[in-house]
Image (cartoon, rainbow, N blue to C red; front, side, top):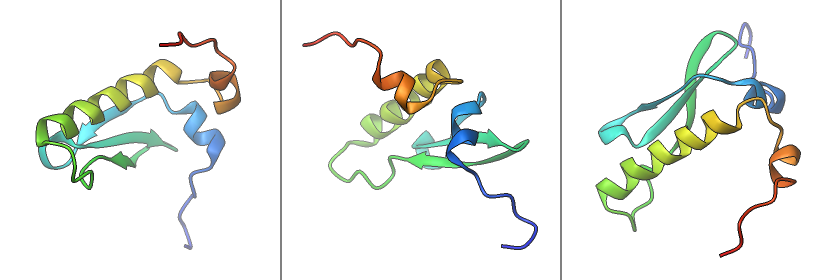
Amino acid sequence: MTGTTLIGSRDIDKATDFSLSGYNSAGVRAVFHGKEGGFCTTSYSFSMSQDAKSYSAARIALLLQMASGLTNEQISQMKLIKR
């Protein structure tokens, strides 16, 4: 991969700009190293309706925005409400 900067886990922790993409907004994109790239998709969640796929992708993008700047370890140490 000559000339390509690989995205590392620390880059994911630092990402601050997330957007929806793809068919019916079922994907999430993020900015890494100043360039937008694919992050995840719900497109292949065949048990979900298209509405649920789009809703889930939006939820993922919102949660990523909320967690921006935190490591997985820091997130996992937060006290979550038990249901």
